[in-house]
Length: 160
Image (cartoon, rainbow, N blue to C red; front, side):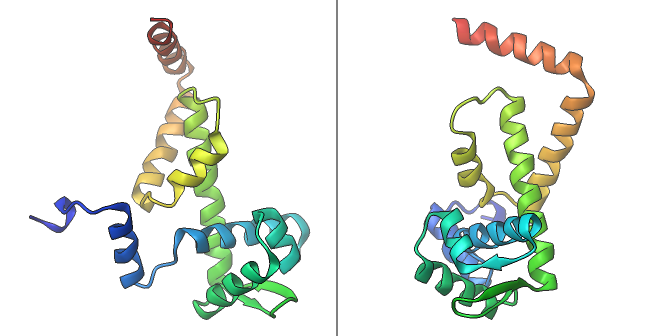
C-alpha cells in the first residue's frame, strides 16, 4: 500500500508527526494564543498565556520553553515572551487557519460548539486542505444564490 493509503490511529498520526519533529497540537494552541495576545496587546506574558488557555503558569512556562527550543519563541521562565520570525509567521498561519475553519462551519450551518469543533479539527488538516476550505468559503461568500440553495436544502433535510 502507498504511503497515502496507510491507515493509522489518531495516535499513530501523532507519533508520525513527532518523528518528523513537527510541533504538537498542544504546541500549536500555545503558539496561536501567544500570537493572538501579541496582536492584541503587543506584549506576551506567561500569566496572560496561561489565563487565556485555562492552564496553570508552570504548564505554560514549560510549553514556552519547548517552543523556544524549536525556535518559535524567546522567553524567560516567568517573564516576557517574544515571537521569533518563525513564530510570528506560523502564529499568523494558525490564527488564519482557525478563522477559515470557523467560517466554514458557520457557512454550513453549524450553530453549537463552533469553537470546540474548530479547535479539534484545526490540528489535523494539512495546509492544502485549509487552502481548499478557504477557496470554498470565498466561493460561498461570492455566490449568495448557492448559499441560499444550500441552506434551503439543509433546512428541508432537518425538518424531516
